[in-house]
Figure (cartoon, one colour):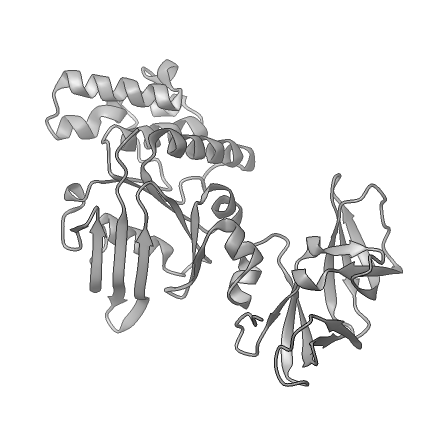
Length: 356
């Protein structure tokens, strides 16, 4: 296991002329942590990663790795290795030579190169591929080689920039498992950029949700899913996304679609507009003794173990329900559904989650 190294970002900013794209990022990454930067296209996640790597100049702020200020250092002096979206393999070289090329350029002794290449190939289970060329490999095998090229450098920190985006759905799943296994085996600090919230949820020790160059929330996958700080995080993390419904604050709860839902505490002055957030999987078909209301099912999607119901509340608002029981529910009909008020999130007019 490699000795893990932590990282810290302090008020890191990036501007292109008068355009600010990263706005004062503060973040601590513990040694050995797997941290995922996630957010929509244009949120600044890849730019932030490239600043950590030294491929983008930092406009302002400080980046430290292992307690050492690396803000102005060359990428080769930072103790990092980066895996890109494109494999960037040399087509005329064998896998063995691709893995060892960077070490060869650094004048590493041949015996040491062979030792490191052999070790990386064993970790990634690509020993039978060492004499092949990239054109003879599948997409998943090429990505393993790209990761192996990073491993042989023995970096303090691995940086991944959407490494699975060129793979098909089945390969993405298998490579997710491989990267998780790799982290467990090596123990290095890893920073991983993706727009795919499923990758973020399944890989991360800690998720950093970004929007417009700012951090919206930092937390474990469970924390950002079950306790989102605001409407953006609640809507971005989770598939299908959380239902957002217009309601109003009431004494000890809120009113929604003509009914009062008790929470046991007051959110705000009665009559104050609020947004009610309910995840599809937290809505049960049938009365359960919790908050109960009627909906009209417009249509349904049957996906084997799961059925999604697309319904309408009495006031015309739309609702998605995730139904996992054995009974299939057909569209076009009125049904009763219920939800534990404790699983409901309520957001203010500013989009912030309202807490007890």
